[in-house]
Amino acid sequence: MNYHWNWRIFFEASPDGHGTYLDTLINGLGFTLVTALSAWIMALVIGSIIGVMRTTPNKWAVRFGNAYVELFRNIPLLVQMFLWFFVLPEFLPKSMGTAMKQMTPPWASLVPAVLCLGFFTAARVAEQVRAGIQALPRGQNMAGTALGLTVPQTYRYVLLPMAFRIILPPLTSEFMNIIKNSSVALTIGLVELTAAARSIQEFSFQVFEAFTAATIVYICINVIVVLGMRFLERRVQIPGFVGPSVNTGAH
Amino acid sequence: MLGNFDFNVIERSWGYLFREGMTFTLTLTALAMTGGIFFGTLLAMMRLSSIKPLAWIAGVYVNLMRSIPLVLVIFWFYFLVPYIGAYLIGSSQPIKVGAFYSSVITFTLFEAAYYCEIMRAGIQSVSRGQVSAGYALGLDYWQVMAKVILPQAFRNMIPILLTQTIVLFQDTSLVYVLSITDFLGAASKVAQRDGRLVEMYIFAALVYFVICFGGSLLVKQLQKKVAIVR
Image (cartoon, rainbow over all chains, first blue to last red; front, side, top):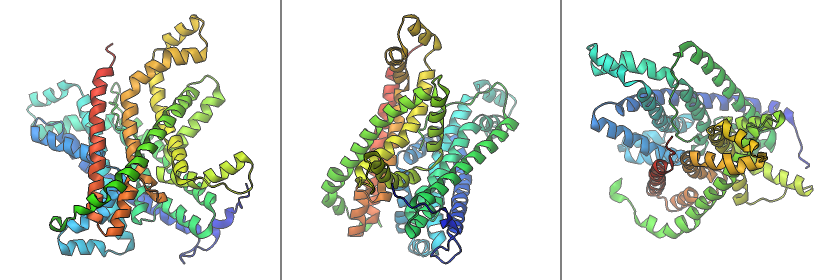
């Protein structure tokens, strides 16, 4: 073991000409957070819609929702990333496809990465939302109908406010997953946290310092998210209701 | 577009894709699953152990693995394993570890953390009374575990363990970051060589989908079969 440790490496100038290696890392963290947050908003919106569709009485809506979830859950995230990055521009109308390929550096990989993570995580969110709605006592739906609410009103005022509260813990872990999964975007050239650590390693040869720093940052994000969500959970919890447990397999 | 879709490229590279690529993917999945479940079970036993330091170490390990992305873990082990190997055999130079062994070690140790959480739930799903009954019959800890608790824990958890294995199968595609020729790596190499990105990536997606969807249907079937009626 003769590894040469040099923790001061982070304060040395990085070869990309934008400050020190520490700045490289901070930039990477920024891209990780931007990608994960935008994709998370997308995933929540699409996931809620698909999840609700799967609980409606409409047969075709249920089929569509199931097909969506199965499609996005059974293809590896990395393959989906390539499909959005390499394959989608070929299927768009020519001018749009060219525009997508010619976007300037961060956008060219940021946009496909957000789309990919958004649609991928939406399938997992949909599974949680469906389970949350189905975990509610059937009487709630009936009571809504008996009160003269329409189906959309029942969802809006009765089912969804309950369902979202009880699925908060699994949604927390999905949010953690989306932050971790954003590292897959390094394969299409997005310089997020893991890619930043990798580039520090490539330029400075200080492998373990770079990876240790990235690991510590990921752990900090994890702790902050868990503490924040625990606070939120306490605020909105409904006594007596335990969330459903669906097993979607963790990445 | 679909008009100039070249199906021939798939036919030409069939042997390379499946004999080399898919064989690697399946071998890696099988080894990592076996090792992962083995170490995961040990970790779960540690986490539930009454010996506090053991429980603490296992807890730290599992939480660490679960809070960093797999891609970072792959990089970590790729660079770390040669140094650990050198330390173990007392060599002054980092030893050479092939990409294959490096990825087997990575996936085994990474998935062990996830299998651990499944097995922990499995062990906890067996009532405490059975442990006491085992001790009362004069069995020691290992006998109680091996003869009473673990068989039931496995049976309860088989569907979830298999679902996690399907996820593991999908995640092995991430060895792409080390330029290893797994199934996706092979598809990607052919795609780059022949300039046929669209065909190869759609084909790869299709193959993964068929395998994983088929697998998840089988798991559902199995779930009905092994469910213990209480």
